[in-house]
Image (cartoon, rainbow, N blue to C red; front, side, top):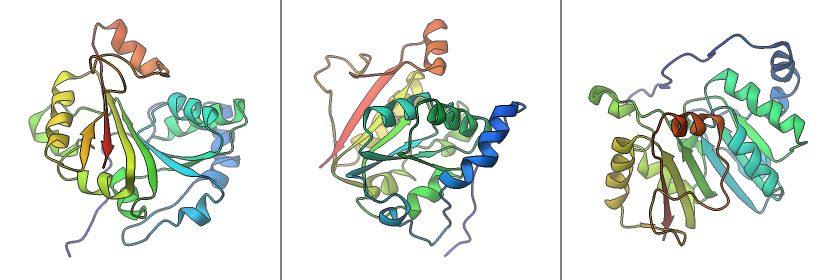
Length: 226
């Protein structure tokens, strides 16, 4: 087997941390962080016991959506994967503000986490507004790709959903091209007439709002695993 390496591109600290963010990282993060590594399996029954389902959000940004979803479903365990410390600090702030206890954090390459998760362990995976990696030579870095779909499929249970959103049309087309080749996935329109209609319920994050203000139209893609 070839040697495996973590692949995290970009800066892990996007901007200087505020005093309260530093406090949260020092005091709260050690209690909430899950650690993964190649060749290991993350036992969710031990790491997050007592929850009826487990949900993953890959690249949660500032944590607005993840915290909102966790607040709506306190009997579900949520895992957020994000390599950027500033975003992690943002999530911890939302968790403190809303007294959330059902969220755990992985600060790592999402590919490592996907390989560590048990088979059929998740009910839902969110991939919302991921980095599109516009340049063709960087397309291999896209988190939804032919190289990652095996693990995305493996960790979803039967009936589970992969929910994606992007306001880059090229990436939306790419996502659909990846999923159409997988017979175990079926597009679920959720009663909508177009992929450009938001799901209900839905939280428009600050990041999504910037795209709206810039005139970009987002696609909201839902696939159910058979």
